[in-house]
Length: 115
Length: 110
Image 1 (cartoon, chains in turn green, yellow):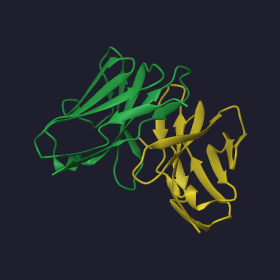
Image 2: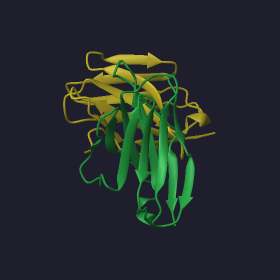
Image 3: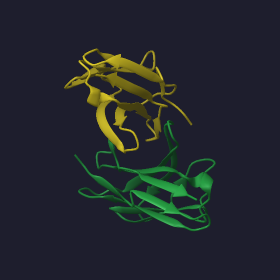
Image 4: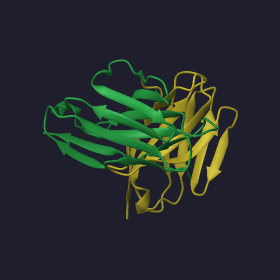
């Protein structure tokens, strides 16, 4: 099946710093990628939808200036958590939609810990 | 907003038993998908069932969909310890919105 990678898989940073997470579709082109956040023992919550070459669409309650999304190519989307705080600590998962628009393939996730 | 709602939230069974998880949703859907997530890992797509389908099989997995009741079930037969994971349903509506349920944590005891 299609493969989506994320980098880094784990990051620890100090409060106030910015962290960039990359999401790549390895063997297919993804015009749409999605970013989710998952807190422990909870479900995935959609943060934003990223369309190649256009601005991301953010879900209600997600600060677009804090979570910067760039989808510069058909295989790469990045999420930058700006001025991270401890409450931003979470598991961030990206996914990419394949060409038939039915199945979303998920990356392995990035665990962010902000000290 | 949450669309799919799974029950039970947690399920513990013995190896070899069958595990059934249910998912309910509120709006009309294009398809419903089941995913599995091992602790601290990404999601693995298990099966997709379209709104015009009633049942689908894949190996030890059996998924049913009842659009009149807006519900779906995932049955894992002859469970194994390696099936221990969280299972999520996700619905896609005709607007391409994709929403996850809260998940069922399955523990299969050896």
